[in-house]
Length: 446
Ligand code: HEM
Image 1: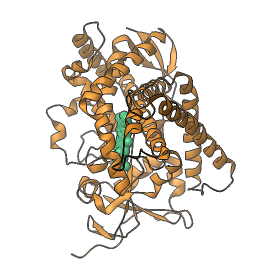
Image 2: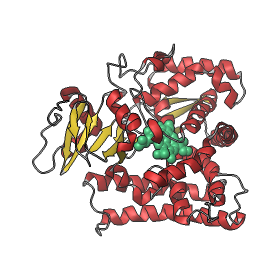
Image 3: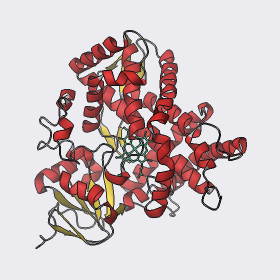
Image 4: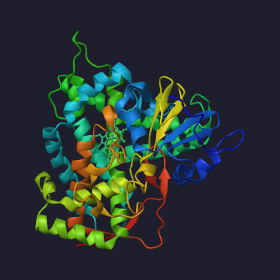
């Protein structure tokens, strides 16, 4: 087969390529480029070539059918300072072994057990909320989901560490963006930004390693107390040796982060969309009120709340917390008729594909009803992939699909969150899709 020459793309500036445009408004820039150049766009940033893939078939090739030809890319590896060789960033045999070991923690019976923690923590938070109060719902959801995942992962409350952890993650994000904005300054350079970056990671390290060591001495590594950590401390290799502390730390840090950041964003963006669409909000309230009839929700109620599920799906479509995934080609290959060289970066953005009018009518509108009548089954496999796809699909997706709707139901039952007039909400794409200045709301008791 004759392959086409290089994929089209923006010319970019002589030295920095498209860096200024990406820094100005990354999401808008991507959508524009795809609209102008098509399903494969070549984008150069400084001396690095990336290919943005936006056809579901090409995305399926990379994530599913030929996933062995690709690895996690240099962009994710940049966050290795925080995640080390945890599940999100590792590759090959190590990733395979760790995934097999951690997978059971996400089986249905465990998720069911975790829902008690989810609901108890939410009730505790709601007990502190007051009618008429103004709050940042992103901040509140971050704190809440962090408390929940800490209990599930570490098997204990992290009350005293939670504020510190929230602050350190915020600092990490700020510095991550700054480093990224200056285009991947080597971490060893003694710049003030690098110093602050390392300080944030050190704080998180102190918290996570502190918990691991406490737990290790309390259980003596026998793995009999609750939590994923305990399970890891109890895991033994064929020769009877335990997992090195560094690996335990990397997995715990990865789960601690991925397990709260993404679900907090899904919740915050959902409340933003409901606030903007009062009709949909009322429809959701009516469903929740009818099913719960004044009592707190439980896992078994979710099956009786189809509109809630559609609201969550639609929110993940419009504001996918993980708004892009990246891979690096391990060999020369062909994608969509183009020759792609070994080492090239392939970027696939949920933000772009989920708004493609070929697959979603009126793509920019919040229409939960589009998911009725098994609409998902009519889509090409990777036209909607908020949790990724293939072997590297999100390990926490069942956890998130229980947690987010349960928390929405618990909150909507008791409060209406009214968007604060005059507070402009904007996206701040970073490692995840965060709201720039939070999402400010006024609470109305129901
Ligand atoms: C709405 C919530 C969530 C979204 C949208 C989300 C999204 C994603 C996506 C897109 C990936 C694939 C990344 C890639 O292919 O490069 C991923 C991987 C991952 N997620 Fe999630 N996630 C969510 C919740 C969670 C939760 C609750 C946990 C843990 C409790 C979690 C843990 C992970 C881990 C460990 C990986 C790496 C898996 C691997 O490579 O084997 N995520 N997530």
